[in-house]
Length: 274
Image (cartoon, rainbow, N blue to C red; front, side, top):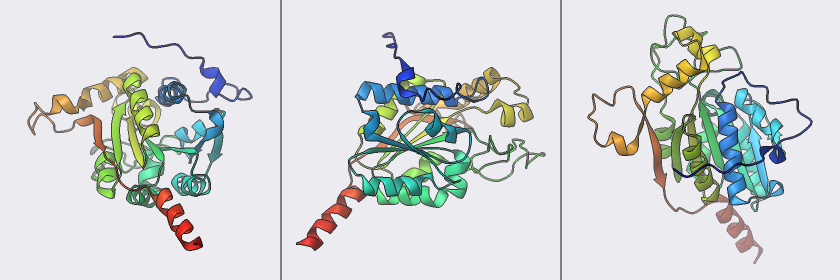
């Protein structure tokens, strides 16, 4: 395996912040590094990118990085990002949000961004819980897991973010875990290059508000749990249905071309001016 090239990430961070304020061991730092690595390797100017986030631990990303950024209200990051893309179609527009922010209160915006195929790169950081707001269960919390609001175990069925994105019409869909930041950076690169909506789900850890309530008290314990649950698409082909129960598949699920919303919108505007 080739050595990973060292990058000076400070050039992409706001220097007036006093460090990244995430819990020690949180996966958000690894996700941010993978994203910045992708931006660096693609050579995208910081002036040519807008990053939008909502409420939650992942919402801090927009405040930490030195791009055109917007920290928005809970569940509304995609709607703000849609407005930015329509106003400035020449810019790369990226959305960061958690599983609660994007599949619960923001779920409607998520499915319609996929349906429209607007040129956004949407990163869903899935730690299976509302991390910052107290540890409530989210639409992706696995069954029987304990949270602040399910102290006896969760008995709701969970969303599969990948299947939700595919069903809604996303044209690039990938999933990876924080265990593999190099592969994640590769998916970010493909998502940023893709013309249309890109959904990249990242299976991450919250040892504070999910792990410690489920006998996983350290970041390592939750990461080991994630590692044991994730299976590559290639490996899954040789596994039967029983072996795949409770597993989370990772890899690239969809990559296809389809008319992009912003381009169609401006073509319509031009035709009306003739």
